[in-house]
Picture 1 (tube, rainbow, N blue to C red):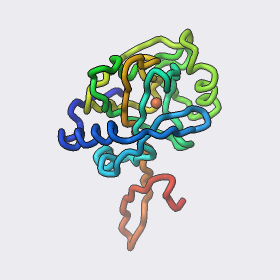
Picture 2 (picture 1 turned 90 degrees about the horizontal axis):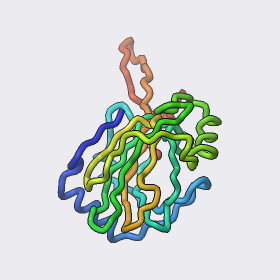
Picture 3 (picture 1 turned 90 degrees about the vertical axis):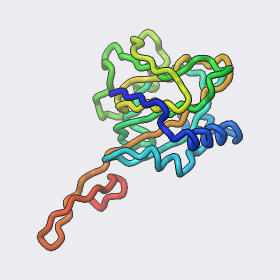
Length: 205
Ligand SMILES: [Fe+2]
């Protein structure tokens, strides 16, 4: 699933978000596996990115330029911060003027296909460690171009990467959001069964 919505945020909110990105210093965040230049997503924007039957597990704004974030890094988002992720979203923020044309590209892996169906973290980690930088293991597929206030939503299992690998001119700025699935738990109260949506990590089971 790839879904693109233009003019996602109300114009006023998007302008405020863009100004926030241009007027604040991004900080280096080291995940151990990769370094990102990041800014926190404002809470009011997180609220506008909520989606039915999911919880937002992580959201941040990231920046790439010719000296930073220059890896090919083809990957799937099945596991983010050790949480099983079902969906991911990219909101494109940077103004196009003075910035290398960029976006998100999807890929087919020569063995696994378009999606990483397995929930095996060893397979996931092996792909990150041993395949994500090897161009020959992948066939380039659909491209979604960056456009201010365009929201790309995709199935977290789909292989993808930013394009191009190196942003030669200017800075690519995107807001990324990861979603986990809500779990339905049946609660029996006075012989009435009610369905309650409780996120897995906060559940009582
Ligand atoms: Fe990703």
